Image (tube, rainbow, N blue to C red; front, side, top):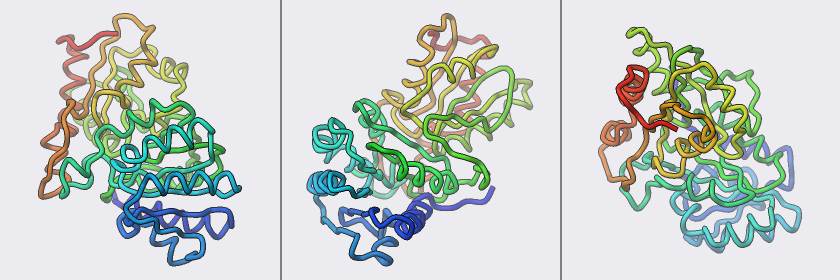
Length: 317
């Protein structure tokens, strides 16, 4: 599979939107060359606001711009947009349902060199818990483009969880993206693997290995973490033996929790979470080294499915 950067796709799409809509404005917290909001700055300097290392002020300013009829996109690393500016997001943007788009860049472990202080392993849980907030996790650069456009058209607060690294392209250029939908990437009949972000490609690899062992795995990309349509999730697992969730995020409060909540009325349904086990990140030589260290691999997904489908235990709803 070919690869491309989500953050470059994000920046390029901001420029496209800026050409189409004069109300699009972009605010940055001194990280424009990392978030790639600098591409918008180059095209529209009069609509680009460099706020410095001050995410709280940036977020409050964006709220004011939204009240004035603008469509602000605010940008920083995910750990800072979700954590440092939490109070302003909750009190000012979300309570009032303001039309602000929040880009959490370098999410998860993708900023592999800077360690735990710069790696957001809990941001999706934080943002998912805020009422009125929509949470989107693109699988690749193609879906990122579609997602940014959908966010710009959506009336209300949106959080975009953007990866720092080049990821495999698995989304069809001609496919549609709709907030709230889920997307089946591979059909199967034994186990359903719900994944998002980089873990979708890992799930597809795991499904190939499981097939060699006689287990058929259905892989679903849950790129809208919130709102999550419970009826669609329940329909997706009908007739299956088990569920595995896979995410580059803490196993607490993210995709695994969301799927378990959606299936809470289903009895004797085995489920396993593949994710970060309630620990902070750390620095490494490269991104793949961290994914391996934290068990965010195709092998881990495969083993979780084998454990469930092989009747070796697992958590049951």
